[in-house]
Amino acid sequence: MRQSVAASRASHGASLSSQANSAAAAAKLLEKKKEFDAVSALERASALYLERIEGLGEDCDIMADAGQVHGQVLEQWPKMFQILSLFLASRNQSEEDTNPEEPSLSTPFEGQRLVRVPIEDLQRAASEPK
Image (cartoon, rainbow, N blue to C red; front, top):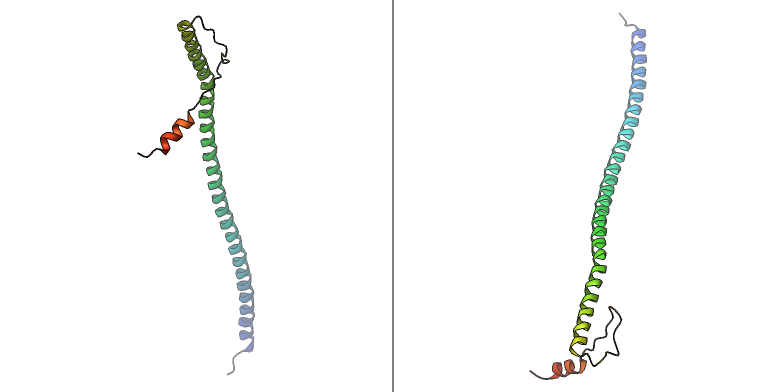
């Protein structure tokens, strides 16, 4: 006896619908893979951005500490000038005490003073063979 052709047709129709389902599943899988790749790239970019921001934060902390140190140094300069002017005043006072009959004509202003460096003597000493 001969087998029915209708049975094979039904299975052929089922295979067409399974192929359509398979193609739809493959398209959905491809879409999800692209979405996953995009999320992974975003996560890597976020991690790099976080590293850069943390580095900037550390640099800002270092600059803040340096600013405090500079402020402390600048705070000391007026005290240093005060000490220098007291030293010069006491030195001028001691010079006037030792020579009261010779008034100083060229008294430097407070905190200012010219110094003569004997360059000729230094050059002669450097040029002499040892």
